[in-house]
Length: 204
Image (cartoon, rainbow, N blue to C red; front, side, top):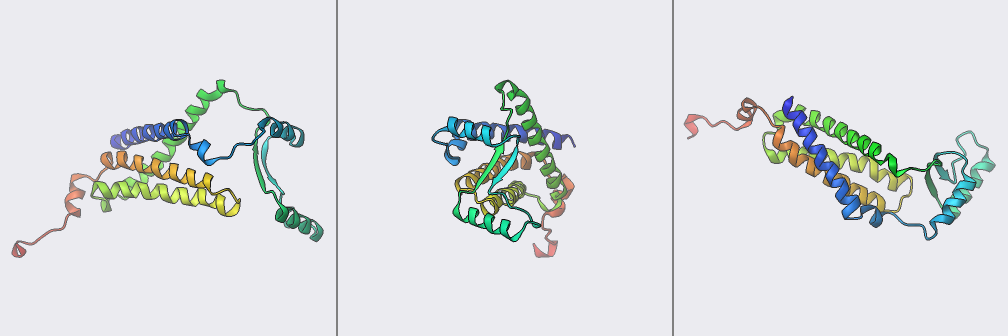
C-alpha cells in the first residue's frame, strides 16, 4: 500500500505540473478556445440577459411535453443559429480565491490518480512488464478523454479545436502518470516469476 500512496502522490504532482505547462507555458487555452472581439460588450449583454448563475443553452430545447408549435419554433431557431452554450457565474471570481481552487484541483487530481492506481493494482497479475503497465494507465486516460471530451463535439457542437486540445492534454497527462505509476506499482516477485514462460529441462 505504501507503493500505491507514493505512486499516487508523485503521479499527481507530475500531472499538476503538466497542467501548468499546458495552460501556462504552452498557452493551451489560447490555442484551443476563441476570444470574443469585444468582451466588455458581451459581458454587459449577458448581465442584462441572464439573471442567475447557471449553464444555459441557446436555443434551449422546449422539452418533451412542449407543443408542436414550440417544437417547430425551436427547430427554426436552431437551424438559423447561432448555437450557444454559456457557463455563467454571475458573481465573478476573485483571484484571491485561486489558492483554494488550486487546492481543490490538486485534490481532484489525487482522486483520479488514486482510482487509476487501484485499477492498475488489480490488473497487475497480467502486467508483468513496465511497458505493459504504462500502456494500461495510458489506456485509462485515452478511454476517459474520448468518452468525456469527444461527446462535446458530437452532442453540443463544440468547435473541434477545444475538444481536441482537451483530449491531447488528458492523454499526455495519463501517459506521464503511467510512466511514474508503472515504475512503482509493480507485481510482487512471485507474480513476476509466475508470469514468465517456463521451459522444461528436456526442451533445453
